[in-house]
Structure formats: C-alpha cells, structure tokens
Length: 93
Image 1 (cartoon, helix red, strand yellow):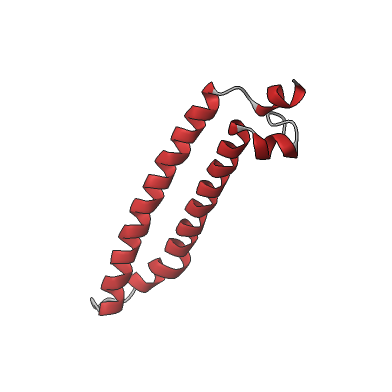
Image 2: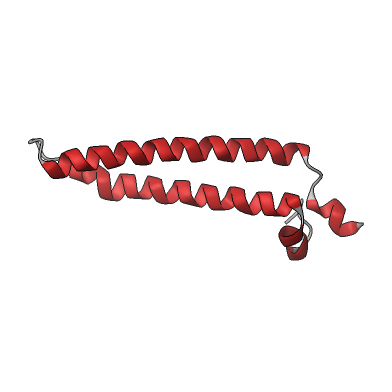
C-alpha cells in the first residue's frame, strides 16, 4: 500500500489495476506450480510407461510452458509499473 496510497487508488488508477493484474498472474503461477508438484509429478513415478504417466507428462509440459509465459508476463508488468507514476501521486493530487 506504500506506492498505492489507498484502496480507491488501487481500483481506479492504471498503476493499481496493473498491480492487481500482476498479483492475479502470480497467483495463477503458484496454482500451476502446486498442481505440477502435488498432482502431476507423483504420477510420473511408475516404472512402466502407462497412459496415465504419458498423460501426466503431457500435462506437466503444458503447465510448465504456461508458467513460463505467466512469468514473462509478470516481468513485463513489473517493467511497466517501473515507468508509471505510482498511484499515491494520483491519490494525493
């Protein structure tokens, strides 16, 4: 809240909306990482190449690519936030 100033500034300024979008993307990355770690990775354990294992590997690959894309988007948003005026300046004006 230091750079945003208030909840209203978080909701009505471009800086605040971009910050909220970044947080949503980061949360999506965490959900994908948790799904990969706790749901898909254990399915790779069997020694035989079963359909379940092949499907888990396909889903793990897809989720990993999505995580990379979301990570690049988060970094791009951080760059955009760095050049915008923070919302506290708008809130104080």
